[in-house]
Image 1 (cartoon, rainbow, N blue to C red):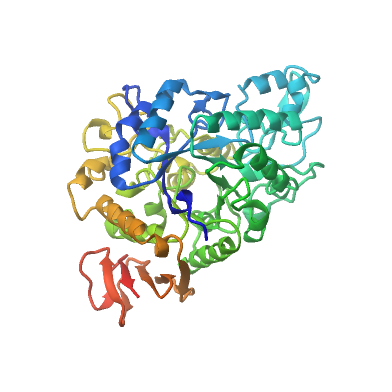
Image 2 (cartoon, rainbow, N blue to C red):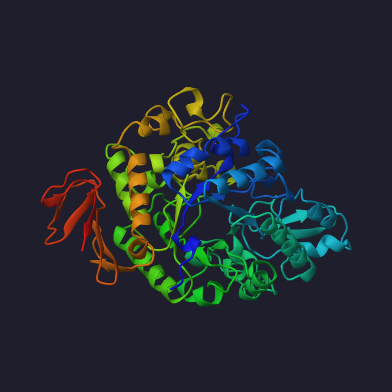
Length: 546
């Protein structure tokens, strides 16, 4: 197996609006990231995945792009971006940009021209129809929006302010390739390709079943993993990525393990994808939709089987990417661990899981200090378009507001978007102004400054595991993964091996003590410091030499 930088990378995801504000306007910005590069370097990460910083009206916090070639004014300037790129490279940290190729903002000049007249040349850049089908948006409501000016409907798989691009139109693809190459020529190190699995739509636009696969919206079989996805990705590779040493990873809802050989590989546009099944477990059989009971009962045995299935699929095609959270999901410690009594122990257990899995590892900002869900109780504290749309529709339907807010408190994407907690000082050291979204009140006890001083902190533990992963690349990155007792919902035991040696990882997944006999294995690390014979303490993680 070839060794490449992106296979060995630990990628740190930065949500710019919430990372660090340099000018006191309450919004994180590029110069704020520059100010905090020392934190990234001390953590030991290899690359930064930067959420969208292109010009945008911010209906969906940058995922509605109005100009691919400019920087969002509230985040800085192109000169600031270039300084950030050079500062990261000077510290040996690569930069991966987040790019949206499925849709633009409705304020993009292409769409403004497209909706002006039916015979405008840019009309074909988007998907217009005289009559809508029954497809529904992934952000609630119909996927078609009526445009009075021209008397037709345009498709938007996400928010109505995010019209879908028409990849079936070759001139549109040429424009996108020109833009992609423009960014690559500026010296970036790759792309995270947002919603890339939905760029291909069924050409006949048939009605969908009432509920799509995995509980997703009606129509998803016809706009996820569509008939020309492989063809478009092959062309993207030939026109933009071939011959470049890049990390390219796709957000690929609707893609299944058997699809990997057609989509990923060293000679394809996608080196890897983010599989998402483990992130949907607590959403239940009806899937990614508000209004369902949340959290839906799930079992760690399900989680383990999902990971193992995808690991084996990636072993046959492409390269595995592993993560426990990002900007689109609640905080991992609140979701998979405990944000109460066992906060620190469960945070260390999840860190051990994350950093002993094979493949490229993605760490979301704030998880290294155990940031938790915000538990905001008022809808006025939320900013996420998906959350606000859901609340509005639920109130129109007459649902109980208390029940709706309980769902939102647990599920909203804003749980992952509260400002980074740098210190216990005013505004958590994030800004000198009023933050664009409220702070999590627990910043006074959970913050970087406090954990910097504590050798037993979660931050210190992350640094230790990252050093260990880099010291044992052959085993922890490239080595084999063998799982034991997949049916257990209490313990997760797996081996990472290369040649005749390796490590055994043992995780107590519960807040109760568990029996455990280590046998002849030599203990290397316990997440709780010392280790006791015959039992594992709540959420304890251990690493043994085997």
